[in-house]
Length: 382
Image (tube, rainbow, N blue to C red; front, side):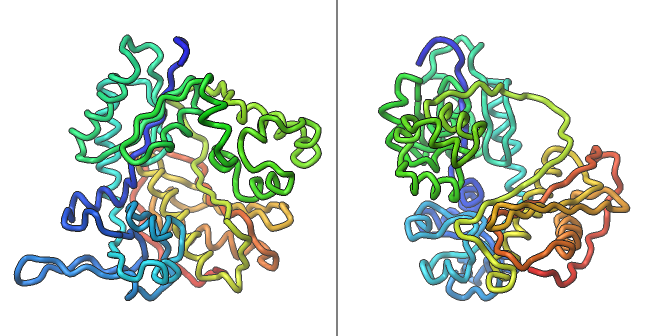
């Protein structure tokens, strides 16, 4: 790596599942799935052992929040319906999500990192960027020291990628999971980056990857070598220029250590287009999960929201948004779910949907807002 900019991306390994294993160490090495809205907590037997729910016994519309690497090896990943997951891993242990615990360990690992490297951009409950450029220490020992303080503070492992920019750092952190430490320089792009599929670049989703594949572009190296005119005809000149930059490992985005957000949102692009009628259960679970994550982001960042909105992108790439202003600001997941559901009733649901998003705007400091009583969820289109 050159001697200039030095950016790290730290990603906690299977974070939610790993936190659960701290509470239930007897489950280490087993396929464990976290998720569902009405999953039973483990029951303690008379002899002190615990009886855990199994994925095969789950009935409902819940989705996987996270899974251990052993469960992932069986094909079970976050966002997948629990009923579908049960067909792949019926004997997997099923645990309810505990977001209070996840937020606690998130605060612990970020404080531990800040004790060594304070220039941090918070990217979510389980990942951060760190600017190491001004720290007078060699890269590998410094990265290992960060991993060590995270483990000492939490008992959890993380993976770190270090590169000259955020794009490469994020890719690098995923290359040697779990417990990885990867340095990726610009000079390493042809050997390490170009053989990877385009989906490894943050911002290239399944639809864009499928379009690239139809153009004969199946790895990042082929994307880097693609004629600009070919990409511009399909994606437009602006996106084509971005695709060319990132495929060559170029990214000049700064580390943003502090800012006042105008809104907080979560969205997801589906692997296949979904319909509100035939895929109602799956969409409902994904929609609820987005609301829970927005609520978690609000609470973690210390905000409440007065305006809840949704975004849908249909199969034909047209988009629609709706929003609703609340009488009281909230950071409660059930209130956000109800408000987002009311927005959802105001959009056409005849087409298949390729993207779904939930947004919280009109932000106010949480400390200034009175607690709001959770609302009862009404029947929604999905």
